[in-house]
Image (cartoon, rainbow, N blue to C red; front, side, top):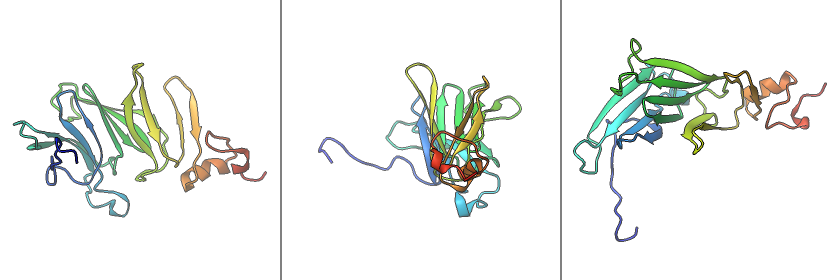
Length: 191
C-alpha cells in the first residue's frame, strides 16, 4: 500500500450476509444484494434473500447501521442492485425488477411502494453467469450486462431479443431451431 493510504474493514456480518453486488446512493449509503440462498444453499433463507442498506451515520469510517430495504421469496441470490434516486433495480433472473420507493424511506412496503418487472426472460436463475447489475449511461439510458446462460425477452416497445448461451437453458432455445445472438450456424441442431 502507498504510505498515504490505509485499508480497514468498513462492514461485516451481522450488518450484511454473503454480498453478491452493491451500489452507493447519492447520500453515500451502500445498498447490498445478499445471496444467502445461492445454489445448493437455496433453502437456507426460506423467506427470500434481501437488499440491505448500510450507513456510516457517525462518519467514523465504519458502517454502524443496517436495515432491510426488501426481503422477498422471489429473491434467490440476486446478482445486481442499482440505485437511481427512489428506484432500486434488482437483477433477479428471470426478471429485471424495479422497486420504486414512493415515500423515500428506503424500506419497501408493498401497500404503498411499487414493484414492476422491467424485463423478463433471462435464463440462469440462481446462476452466476446470468443477469447482473444495471448502470446508467451518460445518455440517460440504463445498461445491463448478462453472462452466457442465454435469454429470450421482449422490450416494452415490442422488440424481441434472443441471446444464446452454452448452458442448458440456452440450449433449449437452440433446439427449437431459433437463431439467436451469440450463436452461429454451427450451433443450431441438424435439420
